[in-house]
Image 1 (cartoon, rainbow, N blue to C red):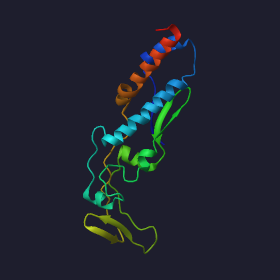
Image 2: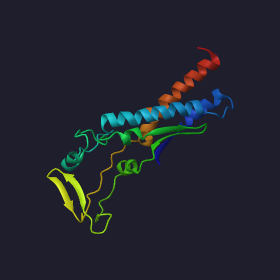
Image 3: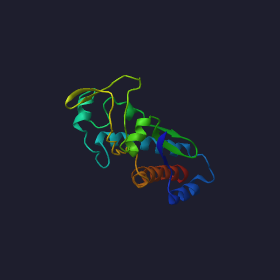
Amino acid sequence: MIGIEIKGDKELQAKLSKVMQGTKDLTPLHKRLGIAGQKWVAETFQKQGRPKWKPLSPNTLAARRSGGGRILQDSGLLRASYIFHATRTEATVGSSRKVALFHQEGVKPFGPILPKKKGGVLAFMTAGGMVFTRRVQRHPGIKPRPMLPTKAQAEKDITVPVGNQYLQALIKKSFGS
C-alpha cells in the first residue's frame, strides 16, 4: 500500500487534548482528515499534478485506450483506487495498486524486457505504429508523478485547516458560541 499518514501537528493535538478532556477516540476527526486527503488526491488528478506532471510522451499517447491526454487517467482505475481509512488514532489515504507506487516515486531505467513465453514476441503501440519484437533492450523508466501530498502540503492543505475546523466545532459544542 502506498499512502500518507495524516496526523495533527503538536500544537493542534495540545488544543484538542484540552477540549476533549481525556477522550482518546478521535475517529470523527480522522474521518474528516481522510476525506480531505482523498479530496486532495482527486484534485491533484484533476490539476494533473502539484506541481504539474511531465507531459505524456508521443508513444504513451499512441498507446492509450481513450486517446485522451489526461495524465495517469486513461482508464480511471488509478484515480479511483485512492481510498481513506480512519481509526481512533490515525487517518491514512492511499492506493494498494502497484502502479501507484511506480508513479508516486518513479522508476529507474531498466531492461532488457523479454516475452513471458519462450519464443514469444512483445507487442506494443508507439507513435510510429505497432511494434513486434523479441526484446526491448532498455526501458527509459518513469519520472515521478506524485499523487499524494508531501508532509508540508498535508499540514498546510489538510491537517491544519481540518483540525482547526474540528476544534472550532468542539469548542462551540462544549462552550457554546
